[in-house]
Length: 458
Ligand SMILES: *Cc1c(COP(=O)(O)O)cnc(C)c1O
Image (cartoon, rainbow, N blue to C red; front, top):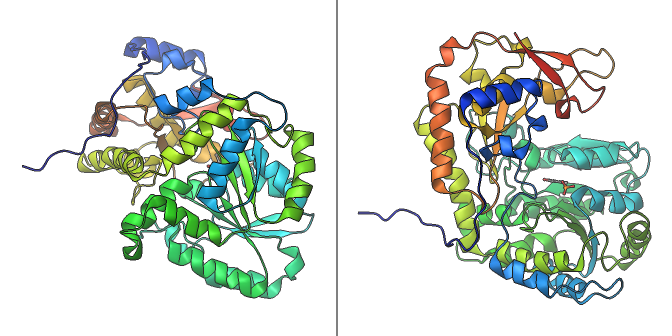
């Protein structure tokens, strides 16, 4: 008989999570006007709101924290982190920041000017925000296949070279400071970019003299997909794969809350001493001195260990297999999920799940609320609520997809937790025909309404 897959960990410390009854949850969610962000964490049994900063550290990371050096300048912990990043990425200059968006803020203060164009693969919200805030434009150049949910493609995060070339041919070179390659592509559900594509993008960019910048929050998960889906890399280690793709870039911005395996932190890594020097000034202004950038010494120590652990195959295999297990179990149960599964989350297709709820009544939000009431599980709506209103007409924007995202924290929940989540969803799915109505919004902020909007049940 085939042995089941087992995680390469055992427990040394545990954290209790609170069970509750359906009656309690009905009251709690009603009290916060059906906004899942407004719940307290004790009111949630399994929290799949995000995989950002929600993972568990290892005993090696915790012990590194005790030896953290809190010196303002020249911290030993900074230099350990710097060395780890240099070895891992090949980039020579490292600036710590308090999280990923702060790295973007510092680096884009140097690189992005009004009127610039920054092509990329479905830029992440904060990346786009920092580009548009500087009156520059982010242009999505992802392959068309990425937007066809019926289609299997092993690398839906890939960039379309033809789309890139059109931009390069019609825009003055000095207006394109860099191309951003997001690995894995968060906005598309954690879909990876292939090495073949990175090589091709790099060589096209080189021809036009335009650098490549990596938005590398989940670079280790991306390397895992390259190893397991691109024949050439079958026998190459994750660390060697990462080193190769980073060799095609001018630098990277990192949210350490993802593949850094820590709860807070970020950094910039670069090759160009001139850009590093200019970015250092902004780092000191916005984040902190160049050897801490808003991070504690002990947190930099834990990050150095985390980056090393995140790029080990055994860890990555357990990580991706857990996400896959949830996706596959749901698929086996007949629950409509997006495929192929991404690296950090599973997406439930609310249009297929509850077509009985009118689209104006926030289907995906209704499903996310039901998932909370029935199982104490917190996911997040990626649909009309998030898409917000058109800034000019103030009408609701209806995106093609209405999704509920279940993001899986790293090293945090067990296989049984995943089975519990899948079973709750199956039970909801079995009674889906009874769902006839959703919600209406009674109060919302002018932008980013999803965090604070208040809803009323119809
Ligand atoms: C999370 C994330 C960011 C921003 O990082 P924070 O640490 O949340 O500020 C940027 N890009 C991508 C792809 C991300 O996933």
